[in-house]
Image (cartoon, rainbow, N blue to C red; front, side):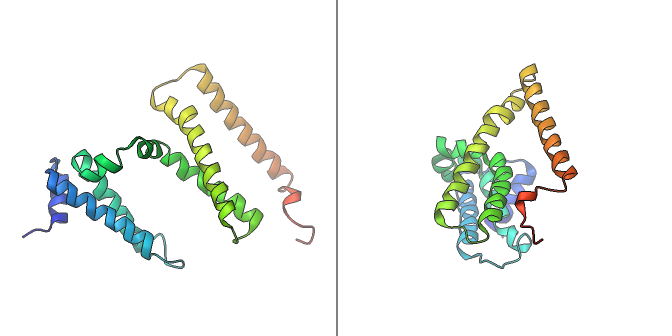
Length: 178
């Protein structure tokens, strides 16, 4: 007899829509895998690697469960969760440079207040990126305004990079002893 997980995988590969009870079980298993990862993964665990498998499989199960699952409909379907979903990729892209900047300035000793600032700045930048760039591209807006904005951003980034490289970095970033 096949397990629920194997049945779900087989049905997914066959393109079938999950029965509501299977969808609920699958979403619950996925949610529990993600919660387990959040609770029991410790600092120093090799990541990414095998440790990444649990949250990835958990996410896959939740997504595959679809709108028939209570979790997806009642929790993940809420407007605030959908909004977070919309900005999730820009948030993924922005949190690293923001975190790197704070770590450079503060070292590894980031306190709660700085952590809240990192989250807030990342959310603001992700929201701006979603609304002013990603959404326009997704909706097919190809106007002169968007093209000009992307061209200016690209040229500005290239100019800053070339200036920093030609000056052998930013002198104020490192003490004279280095």
